[in-house]
Length: 342
Image 1 (cartoon, rainbow, N blue to C red):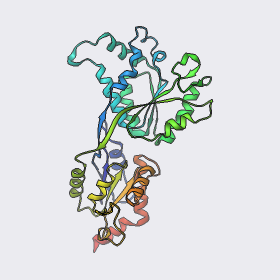
Image 2 (image 1 turned 90 degrees about the horizontal axis):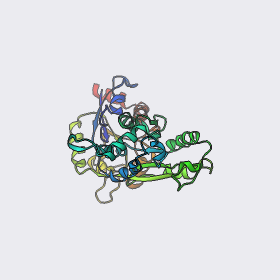
Image 3 (image 1 turned 180 degrees about the vertical axis):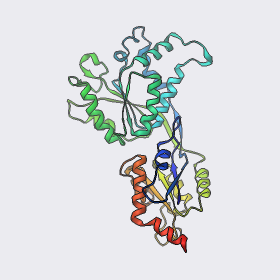
Image 4 (image 1 turned 30 degrees about the vertical axis):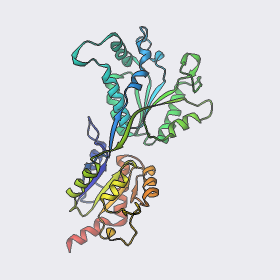
């Protein structure tokens, strides 16, 4: 049985998206083949100037030999691929255009980045994979931490507390200090979007005083719902309308209303989900999975809609496991096979 899986996200650039890889693997449900469809929900604007400003200490003549000392932060935090893309865009601006030779400052910054030795903390495998490609090219002395071992902000905050404090066992924290030579731990630079949760800075700031870590937040991108999302999702649904069963995976609250309207599940007057007796629920063949509790709770509070699956682990494996557990529990596949045999 072919099952479309509509993923409301951009497909990863530069490598095969992990969802494509995991959905292509053999299913634990017999005779099931998943077909992923990517429908971007968001449009992004990147702010590279603040990132370039963070590189200004590298303008000094003596900075190359002591890049890590001159850099005012002890590490970088990335919680989305968009933040990685903003960082990559900023680094790309350092390179001279038109094939000309880099200026003294440009050459110095590029050399400093190659000599910089700091941890790069990433939420989830997709962000870590994108970040590692940038690290290999421009920050070879750095290391990427997190990824598979930190699928949420809470998990990454815990990892940072363990790793960063282990690397600075004798240093105390002054939230306002960037002077590592004073015996204080340097703060971390958190590259984030205009809208984000504060779980990481709150966790690091509120740890016991001997473990506390300063965090400076730097907004490097902003996201809005894609202007073509309504048309794109309608086209995708039309393309697989004949499928006896399909899944939609939502990754953020943005686009929730557009999605529910496209499915015909939202009441135009109340902007809430239709009641249980509404004809839209008869012979329902579309099911919704959420990447995690934040998105699940948002659509329930805002629209009164309860997603069918909330992934226990915010990863391709977690989403697929949740979907397959749901289908087995509801015996959806056996029901469809019986209907097809009639």
